[in-house]
Length: 260
Length: 268
Ligand SMILES: Nc1ncnc2c1ncn2[C@@H]1O[C@H](COP(=O)(O)OP(=O)(O)OP(=O)(O)O)[C@@H](O)[C@H]1O
Ligand SMILES: [Mg+2]
Image (tube, rainbow over all chains, first blue to last red; front, top):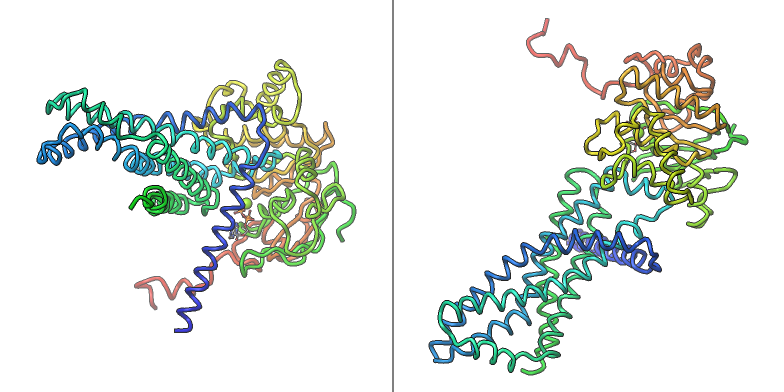
């Protein structure tokens, strides 16, 4: 029994130490004054992290929007209010599904790649050799990737919502025959910029922070062997996904819970 | 023992968890000479280079580089010292997202204000010296292991540093490349009065160019002497290592029962 408590305590302690280390890594990486030469590196990472995640986002957003259009239509038409389908699709996407689904996809697509890349750099002594050239790998490698994540995900979430809404339109209006004017009109009336769009973007920013942080820390601190890198990559996806879902609940409660 | 070398290791102890890697290690590396560090695999040769480069901190003792205790330097001072030092990592450690040319150009771009032409010429000359000028546009993934190591060597010497640390430069090289690399290391050393620290398992090749050999084993310096003196040494451990005998004071085999007892169907 005492052993169990001791083990639990030790486990908790190592976790806390890890979180402390991760925080320290992040602070060292992001509090540097930017130089002119860091811009091309940021652009390159924006391409790798953001642009290369675009296809998977577009396809998923289209399908999710179509499913929402279909489900919304069947549900709402039972009450004869299928004109409201546009409003339902838009609110579901902007408030919840876009940030959460885009973030989960982002963790799987970009987060895992970041961890593997940095882990491999560590294993092949590239980080050590940067250090020996007098360059801090936290500034050179970690920082641009972090900022690229912070910038990309909110943009991807915005695109996700737009494409999803279009997907809903495709099913509800073009296929099932809802009047196009009421699809857009209801949406415009129901969606509030501050309440919905801005809150969705805040979620996206929080998720971007969590994913980038987890992915970079896992890569940077991994055991530099093939098993170590693969374990770290798995941890990135698992921890990011759990963090996204957990924080989504907390944020939703804070943002929309007051009205209840 | 440790006197005024350009690199001084004073009473250094270093541990990995409970494992002792070094206990009270003392040695000095003389300026302008080639010092070979040898010893069985896993004794801590790479670890020693990392202590010298300041990437690892000793648990006890001091590492003095240019007469400065590197544990007491701040980041900026340490980086300043590191710019005077070139390192060839055991795995080469080329940047995988840069071409061969850009890899060699990397330290020059970071630390020197060369014109585009000067930079280009300097990189080409370094690549020429390792026989890979023609490979300048290849990516590291397109190189063989031995080629990658030669590119890494060109990169390590690109800054024309005062100290170069080579971790196994000869591993995976054919006899021709080996001889070229030997001449290159020797040449760099004599032309520019560089201090070279060379970790190697190739006793003959390393002894041929080294002025001094430090033999590591069991967490300490087993011997520190000129190659000729070591080859004539009567010390059993030194003799065993230099002549490559499996049986002796340094165990080659992991502890086990006698072979006859373990082979099947061989009793009596
Ligand atoms: N990151 C690490 N964590 C724990 N132990 C390590 C680590 N790196 C090295 N070691 C241990 O330290 C010892 C010395 O390692 P080192 O790499 O310095 O050996 P070496 O002399 O360079 O060997 P080789 O000739 O095979 O390259 C090894 O026995 C190794 O098990
Ligand atoms: Mg080694």
